[in-house]
Amino acid sequence: MHPEVELKILSEAEAVLGPPTVISSPAGPTGSSREDMAAGEGGGGNGGSGGAAAAPQSYERLQALRYARAVFLEGLRLHPSVPQDVKFAVSSDVLPCGTRVPAGAMVLYSAYAINRMQEFWGPDADKFR
Image (cartoon, rainbow, N blue to C red):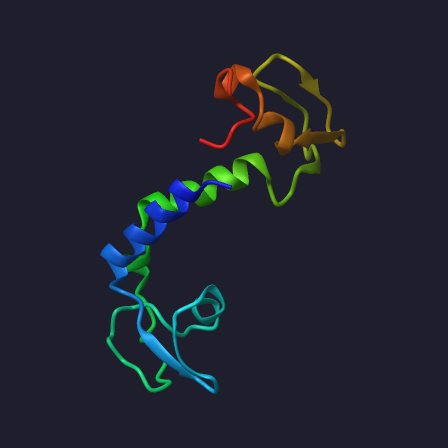
């Protein structure tokens, strides 16, 4: 849906993690695919081939994928894994807007709706950006 974003993520990954490696499959050598990456093969720039899995990436190197992280978080903003949730007040409280919440009250909120509010995200709140 956003090919320019995908290209930028791939470019960042190659710059940070190194070029994809060539792996061997029963059908012959192939370039790293998304399935290979998910299985822990390919990527990492170790230059290996012949079926050897790439060395695992360090947490620090993965943290350097800033653009990829931003894209992931933007995807979660628009399509939260938990679109709505329910909580119960342990004690009486007052919300920032002044609403009183008595102890034991059920509070339902919608992350899906909040993450698309123009008040917080601007006039294009429902757009991937």
